[in-house]
Amino acid sequence: MWAHVARITNHGMTMTQTKLRIFLGLFLYSLSLSSAYAADSKFIGQVVPARMEAGKQYKISIQFQNNGGGTWDGSYELVSTVKDNPWRRDAIRLSSKTSIANGRVATIGFTIAAPSKPGTYSFQWQMAGSGGSRFGDKTPNLDIVVDPPAVYAEFIHQELPGLSKGNPPFALMDKNKPYKVTVVFKNGGSDNWQGAQNRLVSRNPDNNLTWSIDQVEMHDGELVRPGDIKSFTFNIMTPEKPGIYNFQWQMVGDDNQWFGEASENVVITVR
Image 1 (tube, helix red, strand yellow):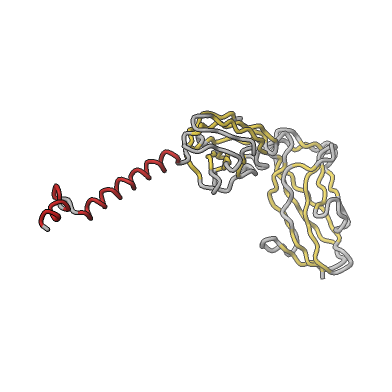
Image 2 (tube, helix red, strand yellow):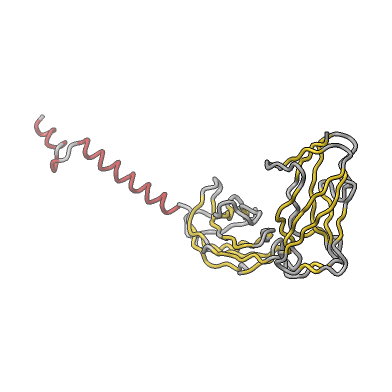
């Protein structure tokens, strides 16, 4: 019996300790395999304009190297890491024909639209697997300057009788009655506004005559330079029929195209 015990406790190690040692070895080996096959990526380069014009579309190219153990296929995607992403595309899925093995480089080309409002915006992306989990390097975080277009209008404020703040703003008016209103815009572009070319037009629905007028012209010879403020003050007539109506306006150019921001929509109850 003592000989048997001696075999079990050979070199001072019990059977339980031997099993634990074997289990630990297998566990560490499995971890090494998992690490070898874990998704990973290395940022290689990107082609991104440093400046953009608001609302315009641009072609982008980003390159990542597959540094993991698996092959990237159509279930992988490039995702934006920017909070409240302003680029209108949150993810770019790889082609269904994609097969990027370890060590190979994926070139991901796509088109984005610059934000409609001028400003400076962050631009950063990262690879993600089929389950949506991000992995590997991120692209360098770029601060892209979005310039105003040549023709751009920034809504400033408006004045209506009984206007109350809300989401959306609202007002109460009597039916079939005239009211004086003011809508104010800033020339946020690089071109002048001229009396013969630019005007204010009703929206929601477009060119509506809800308020008995659908266009407000600028004065002949009037010039609104970039950065200047333009106030449109005009009279409206409320509808004869009580109900709920929208009040919204936007600038139009000599090409009859809307440009810039629309005024904040006001929901008006006509009684």
